[in-house]
Image (tube, rainbow, N blue to C red; front, side, top):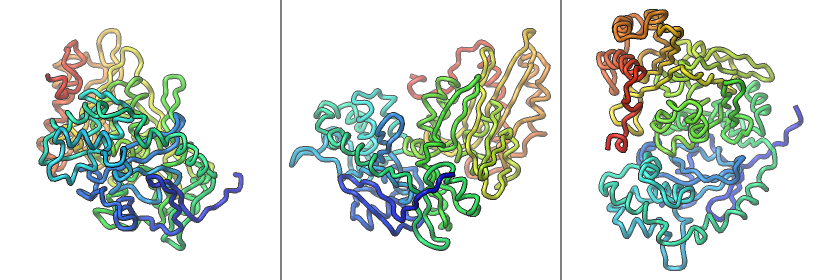
Length: 493
């Protein structure tokens, strides 16, 4: 590998000014730095776990499509991940002297704020939406605000404000619109291809120059914490006070942010976020679209990565069960060596995965169901949006010409210590006619596959019953019914 230059500082743009930091702790969050070091206190701390949206800011980054601004949770976004980006806080919104920004003015005029604590976060989420869609639909507004909680105003007023924003002025007067060309040039100038190393001993921040450099670093530092989107690692710090030193931030690595398809198999880089994957995956594998829309809020989907959701080994991760049901394979890399394994074999036991020291998840390869093959995903939670999974079921089915089950894969999350296939249920279905009688007979095998636990999300009995009934639902929906795959408020109306 070519020699990599090392830089001992991170560089980014904050609102209109350049920031250069040579002293950065691995666990310093963007929120704490904004409020304590820069006295930018419009960004609030509510939950400190990426759920309430009070800390929402925009982060602009260069991608293949140019300069992209995304809403993120500053409370779980680490300062070390911001090299080469443009951070925008509510203080940067400005109109003519004495005037509010159109987003702010709309919130005032339509009574979208009462106590005001959550308002800056709503403003920033709506700002990000407005830049992408000046005339958004109700569904688009609701999606953009999934990660913003208000307990005193009521969302109808905020919805009316969101629809009215464009009537207050054109985007041409907006700071991020007028500065776009200049900010793009400034960010391009920051891309020097260097590795960032800050600190000494264990307390280090490392930002690899590229994927090969990341492989080299991790081979030498197998105990380092890999931080991609920080939607999981962020809570290690804010809720569990865990030491993540040294931390290697890989969210900026272009080589891990690719999506390609070859011969019906989609290869998704481990650094691809839910937002980046949504448009492609929802077109090629439509059942994944409604699932991705229910993973966290918009801020979490803008940060969280598919590779991270796999690598952390959580038994309630939302993407492993559907990927297992689709027959996905995983590429792991250690230094220059790679190996590819079935995704389902990656999960060994609770907290244990088939990953050697210094090895990392590089990509996941997902077969696209062929015409006639059936695939569905169902997520069970206490509330529909932005909630942790109680149980999640994914079903893949291929029928022979005579109507018998030629191939079936059923995978669950939340039912065991790892994402797990219902192997006994599959055996009871394979080769049998796809009928309600067959399905009801197979449902009796769930007790052999799973012994779910009781926790705050659901009881063991509820999980066991829901798991069985989801198979029955899949049968009904693949047998000519017109029932919707996921019922949303709009669909129900």
